[in-house]
Length: 201
Image (cartoon, rainbow, N blue to C red; front, side, top):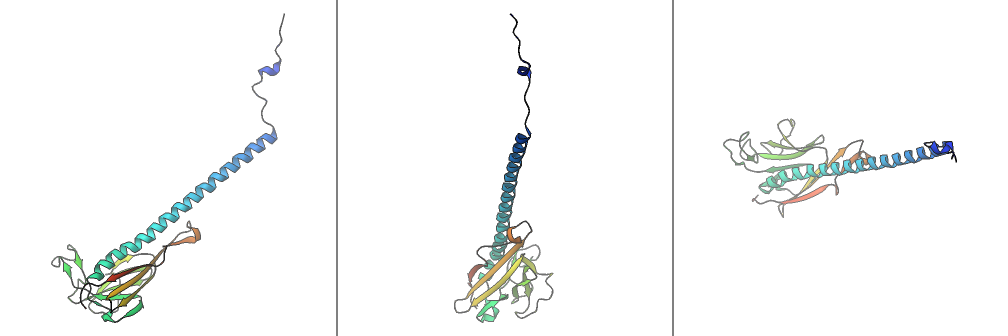
């Protein structure tokens, strides 16, 4: 007896219909879209977190220097109570290895002369530490000054002579087209710190 096998049994597959192809393409495009959204959301979150860390570090580095130096100061803005100063002037003696500073030694205070003044001020978007012989001296050339912080939005200080306390407020901001809203500012802004002066006026 002869058995016949139908030709359809040897077909590898029937293929896809047009509707099945369209459904598969739609699912693929939808999945790709979800992955792209997840990628850009993650990228934006990473950039926001990185920018937030940068603006916080800028302020904290500046405050580290300023707080250490202000604690040793004697006179601040001629010891007159002042509020919302955009330039902080104070007198602090030279210290540490004064025979070889600068540039080899480590100096504190005014390196130019005994009784000189140190100034914190903003020029452009930079917070500078400058030195001069007198408290009221104008700082025209900042090329000899040291940069304490970049991308500065605001800087102000209050001096309470009765308690010998300086309160400083500093805010930095970084801008980028990749950040939500185009910029990132620290939270809370501005960052505030108070310094108790140790030396007598």
